Length: 149
Image (cartoon, rainbow, N blue to C red; front, top):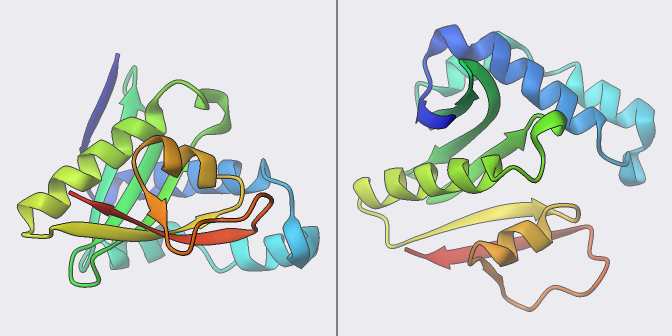
């Protein structure tokens, strides 16, 4: 059974694992595989613990294993991260994470949130109610998207 809860520092190694797996499962894009690995090398479990001081982090668990996570910067009115373990794609994990982050945004007094969607995630965000302005072109590499809460 899938549950989504606020994350804590002990979740950071699993958050790291999920992000590494998720990013490595995507096409490398314009930066190429070397560029992806260079960027991933800047991620560490300690980085997430540090960011938890200023952002709301949530984790999705299935059978007590972290299978997705997300982060919200309330001050910036922005969802900064949503990642799902590739083995759990298309199992509503991303939707559950977004729902929890949106609830945290409402609790923080926000009336809307924005995010930067990569090309591979644009359709997902459109499906859960986000819009881009201007409208996103087919095949776009990224989009700035917003949702009224």
